[in-house]
Image (cartoon, rainbow, N blue to C red; front, side, top):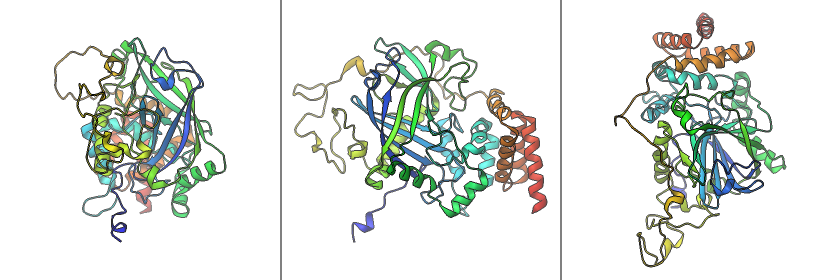
Length: 445
């Protein structure tokens, strides 16, 4: 009974509901000129992975088909330790300032008074933070309701840095392109499944793997020469922006296959803990402000949710590498606590020593005034979402307009008008379409 009273742990603040599977990543192209990471060292080399898919804003009981980005987090169990690629099924995000991330998430959660989802909060924030319109345009297209987890792409979203054995660095973005083909649900189909099969995506993934129909993704990178990042027409480290493929084409480097379901959901999928700060030599962070905030935030929430020694949980353990550190004690130590070895460095008793430059971050020059600098608001925030809208087919445009209007109709009139002002800067046709659709909604009420 006492154990039963303590069976529950806190759910994730975001990405609460998820599904996961084991598999492998196989290198298909030599990129040792880009990275010294050992898991990328030779064509044909395989590295075990665990991939967790998730919805973002809703609680654990939410439907898999809720309109939302989808988490796409991959843990690579490499011989040098674990690398976590914490991505989504969209190449951009809503905000680029980590201090705005908690504010944004609060707008997607429940109203503190009514405990209901709040259209005013969502669109009040969106209309006052217009950098979010690019991601909202993706989420309110049919990409926001994918047909399960197997039929969607995954992206690192953030710019990362690959460094080779000579210390030469390149900026990269990772793209996981589904081999099953993109397949999405209409708003109507997503709503019907939410009622008839709210665990649709979880069921689809599990049953296909059980049947041997293993889903796979072609792993690609975009590569930007180091110095170009500082002169490119958009801020290369702004997570609300993409790098157009015509400027930086996709380069296939590997294949990822999921071929084994977890034996126990709680032990593996629920307790798995990803962090962009879990890196290996040859893969490094960029100056992306959102990424820099996440380097701290993710392991901090894991220590709260799972405990200070969450990395000793089997699903999180770097089991392909030998662990050498000076972390000791704390609740739930299960690895022998490094026995009688010293817990300091340097030492004279055979304990772990610093490995030197082989694991250090590749240096680069910085200059300027130390301050908390805000990104300057320019029309650049509207160029890419405008291009996205203009690339859509008439049917896709109609769907996006109706989805926007259906979500915005619950917000106060002045908030609606302010958001339509944002849409006008994206494309006048988008704003006119949403206004017309809102008028239809109002006449029906």
